Length: 243
Image (cartoon, rainbow, N blue to C red; front, side, top):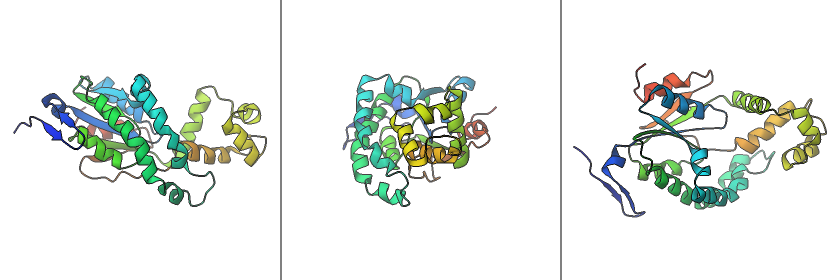
């Protein structure tokens, strides 16, 4: 039976026949997990698929860029206090404020994504709270969600190594950089990077790998293990792409 349309009257979302047939894979995960590389691999290797990098998608749209900047005012509530032993409890106290700030932005993103002409799309972006997936499926009822997972210690190593590849001299920055990040680190741990490599990773974990609600494996929710950079084959299997 062919579905003609889906009307969600509460928010005014209407899916056309083309949009109902559109295959959306929401590819998410922490920074440095390799999700963008995986999305690009699928698009490069399987020509019927297209990768949409969410960060670029937002940055290239003035309305979305303004919306994300507005929503980001609650990022400090999502991070919590550096060094707090009960960080998750602190963060979860602000769940309602976080949703109020971010839900309009995600609705705007999904509405714009509906306008993309390609039929098979891997959309690479963040997902901090499970309600985001409920909103996603209001717009794309048959979407799949794939979370790219990497062991936390590996993530931190990759993140720092990526900074080195981008030309960062951590010893010089720790000593001389007057920005907020390194000023905080010097005040807390002393003037030199050497000997504070692990403390730097603790800061990076707090700053960039802040709490996300785990995505449960369920119908149309999948997990890809990318510890050994072999997540592409797992992703192809999820998408039923023979090689």
